[in-house]
Image (cartoon, rainbow, N blue to C red; front, side, top):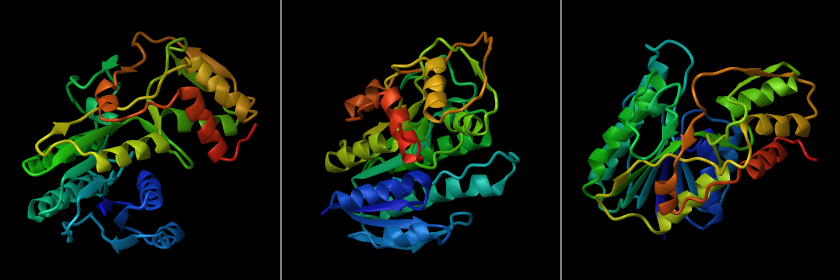
Length: 296
């Protein structure tokens, strides 16, 4: 049986991955920082164990795992000097690197990274060859975690999945969750590049399916790749917002703002080659809003 460690399994994406891997029959250990009812629910799942670890300070990890997943991604909108942001992202990567170097079993390190490594605003076109050039502390620490984990590639494959917004229940931050909050408050929504396609999202289910596929068929040791993820953009930005507005019965005014910068296009061909199935944007939005309690 494949043995898996999920660092920060109590996080938004981490909780979903723990549940999905348990349902798929994997043995899953996960770390969490803060005790909550959600952690207790995960501990009751088949084949799941938990360990409390706080990566705001340097800390070690123990055990033998075939797969190590890093879901640690502390985020802050505050000061660039905020240690609560910098230290967890860096310390978790160091702990995983040290564990992988001691382990005789680890074949795959799967690192949940972010499109923020490309800087903000995002380039007009993001491909696997696009240079990482972060412009904030979050993006910088995510890129640093990627670079640290690459040092484990002598004995394991290292895959850095660069996430856009990941939609699912309680999704937060980024464009679409912010739009939803404003729609629910009937506040006006300002949009740029309204008639261009919207690429920058994926779904929890798409991430989980890719994770399971990579665990069952990992790339060869020494492989290092950092693919960006995206959806299949069957809607324009305006259509996506109007879709959401109709589903939640909002009276928000939609305002178009002129922009000289194009909307970002994301080429996720490398991720597709690894087994990623880009979710269709309209279906992704419908499933997310249903999870949040908005049913047609």
